[in-house]
Length: 118
Image 1 (cartoon, rainbow, N blue to C red):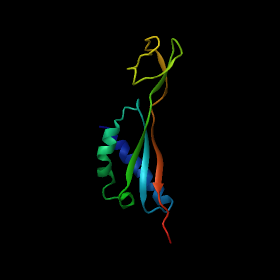
Image 2 (cartoon, rainbow, N blue to C red; image 1 turned 90 degrees about the vertical axis):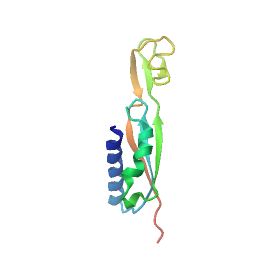
Image 3 (tube, rainbow, N blue to C red; image 1 turned 120 degrees about the horizontal axis):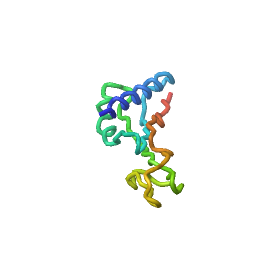
Image 4 (tube, one colour; image 1 turned 135 degrees about the vertical axis):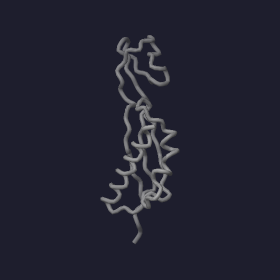
């Protein structure tokens, strides 16, 4: 279950970014997870509370996720299509020969915080 290790890295990066910028509390972090990345978003949701435990900067922090579609370009007929929705086959010609255009990424997309009132 490699989701836990990349989630730890994303949380550490968010925590370090907050520290470097004098932010004491994060209200949310947003991860962008590609359909073709091999990561299952359900595990990020499940283990996020465990990973942020005992990290004060994440108290009541929300995990948001953007799921990036796995897009492909058929190398036979040049049709663009969603790879996952079509089980890897071009819906136009049935070919499995494709160029992957997107959906393999895993990004810490956004870190949300509220500025402290003086």
